[in-house]
Length: 187
Image (cartoon, rainbow, N blue to C red):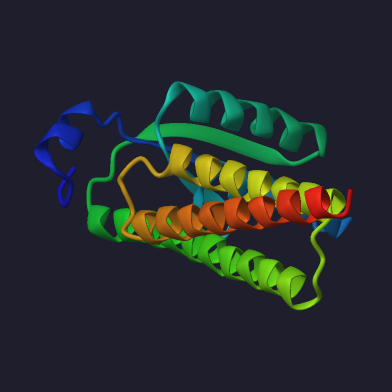
């Protein structure tokens, strides 16, 4: 695949393309398909034509989604293909989608850090607050891992997202230390 390092080109297996049509009503059916494709990391090449880099897990997920679309009284075909022209555009769209996801994670890390600052400002140093923040951190880490798992070409935004999450972890640890100290003093 042009635009990719040689090692990646040799291991690439092409693309999977799902072309589908779902009934226009109820609109929740279209939304459900869109959400599922988004969660898989697919990109839309045009309306109702979504692509993913080929892999066994992607094929399994798209076959399942195709079956669900048929159950909705829709139609769908799943194709295995290579890009003959415009590959740089397809790769750029896929990379942009991953970078958008990484940027969203960075934004949520900012919100997480702002929430920790608020805990300090309001002098909230309890185990309950710590547990709530730990749950939020685990969600951020899981989200990053999901995006990383579908980032098969190594989007540029990964490092910033990893750094942001690492800062969240450092600040959460500092907050935990403060909670432990405050709880020890109150006894």
